[in-house]
Every structure is written in C-alpha cells, then in structure tokens.
Length: 220
Image 1 (cartoon, rainbow, N blue to C red):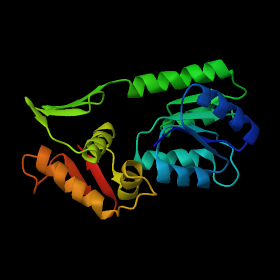
Image 2: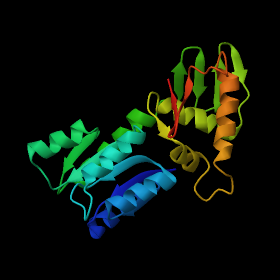
Image 3: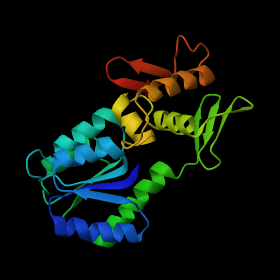
C-alpha cells in the first residue's frame, strides 16, 4: 500500500507536491485522470488520497464517491473551485478536508501530517476482548495472545480499521498481497476462514467477519 495517491491534472503542480512529500518520507504516486486514479487505488490502495475536482473526463467527486463505496480512506480535496456549494458537496460525499488553490505548501504538509497522526498514530485497535497492537504486531483475545501469520494480522487489521464498511475481494487481495502477487484470490477466502476460526465464537455462523455476497467482506 502506498502512503499518498495524488489525482491532479496539473502535472507540474503534482510533481512539486510529490517532491515535498517524498522529502517527508511518504511513498507517493500521482496521476492526471479519475480513471487512472481509481485504477491505482484498486491496485495498490492508499493511506491518503489528495484529490483535485476539475479533471478531464470524470471529475474528482466521482472518484470520491467510488472510494467511499469501498473504504474510509482519508480524502483531501485540493481544488480551484471555491464556491460554497462545491465545498459542501465534497464534505457531504465524505472528504476529510477541502483546501483551495493556490495553497501554501507548508499548510498543505501540516494538514497531511495531521491526517496521518489522527488516523494512523494509534498503536492499538480494540474490539471488545480483542486487542490489536500494531507496533508489536500482536493480537490479544481476553488474556491470551493469539498466533497469527503476517498476512492474517494485516488482513484482520485492515478489516477492523474499516469496521462497518464492505471491502471488495479485489481491494482486500490487492492491498494485502499486492496485484503482482503470484497468489490467487482463493487465498483470501482461506485466510478469512482461518481468521473466523480464531476470533469467532462460532466460525460457521460468523458475527464479526461477514460475507457480503458478490462483493467481499465487512467487519462488524
């Protein structure tokens, strides 16, 4: 998974922002169309999407809607559209913030750092008796530490971080295994089965990791 995906049709502006972000040690990918942005997001995933609204073809609002259908990935809109209605539309569709162009690069970097700090700095995820420590990469259920493979840990963490949202099989597979993996999507089904056996009271009647038929899975 990359840190930041930039969808911006002004290549010069995108290149400058990429340089600043990489200097801050973020991994960054940039593209100039909605279609390419969504393809990159499906393939690699992202911890943050920096999104322009005025794009050739489909606009940024279309990208935002598609991202929100599958995850709660933070989205930062950066646009020259400054009308109140445009801002309200972006925020109502689920954007985390809306920055007007032209922007001060220091303000932009501060906002991005703030998003990462709020969303990703918490080391521990808690769900009832289940505790996941992302620093030590351990999972505790009750008083017992559970044995988890690396992929099981990453998959369960991703599901819990997106609690209540349906994540497609393609998104889960590409995020955890990578689109260039030699594994097949069937391995996702196997890992879901193993996780249910470890965390569900009755793995045959799961209450936490639910199958959304024809789409993927969600964690409740």
